[in-house]
Image (cartoon, rainbow, N blue to C red; front, side, top):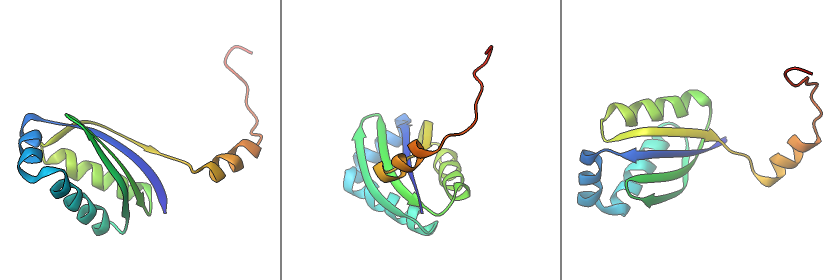
Length: 105
């Protein structure tokens, strides 16, 4: 599983839905969405109109499907997704020494 951080902004209609469903209702809907892609929801937070979620998904295609589905609903706009690393994974990355030349050097 790959861990992703997702952020989006609700549209006016999306905020109306959030007020109707409440945070717990939206959390259940997101859990169901993520599970339908073979993943799990780690956490979900709100700072209206923005939401933040951390999910575990099997591959980048699944996160693309999730994002496209959510944005196509018209309830969310201005989303971002990032693959995120655990501290142990960052330790592994820090040990790698890729070859690189900075621009202009």
